[in-house]
Length: 320
Image (cartoon, rainbow, N blue to C red; front, side, top):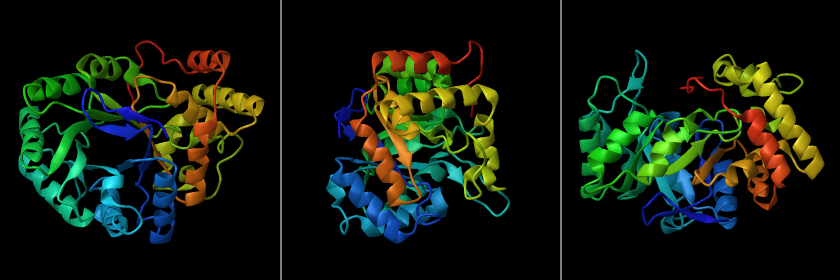
């Protein structure tokens, strides 16, 4: 698997990253073990998680597998902080104290003294960005994180944080949603990242599962869209505009004798602005489908057709 430089840093990551949103919740220890082994055997290195995934359960599961299934040094470990869980409901907490205490808890669960990449997961409207940045700086200077970045932040915050960190630490990465169904970041975030030398990690590269084609005819009973808790996550991509993109992807897949999933990931692999695409799977079998996309080569005419049908409309706001 191709290894790419993360922005202007010396860190290199695999062009596919392994997401762990479902680990310890929908993905048990056996499936996680198999996923991690298959991913590393395929040349993958970037392992993406968060303190908020399963309330820390995903990190605990990763910690139990590192050193057993794979060596700690064989993965680029990325985790995130900044989402607070509470009995009254969660919310953003990018305060210095909140971020650093969360990072310390993450390190304990992961069983390591540092992470390779640490991201602030969401914007916090109640905390000055300068305070958030001070926590990011301390994470690096204290040796708890090798590199830092942001996740799901708008372009102006990415640029501001990069400016505040430019003199010493630097902003290594921004993790944002990006796929054939969500290209809104091309307006501000991608140009800012390119100008400032920041690596871009794409989450939900399969359009929240819609680009696999499984929603073309109906909503499967075991899918996210059928869940009362997750239907709202998928619903924005089930409209007529998205359907046109999905049909184009399916048509390309038929012509290339591959799956729509493979076409969607192959399209992303060609985007020079994207360092790595984070793929998640409930099972090892599903992950192997994503890993197979490495062998797919898209003809130029198909790339142009997909670019055209998925192009974001001018003035359409970025989804959050």
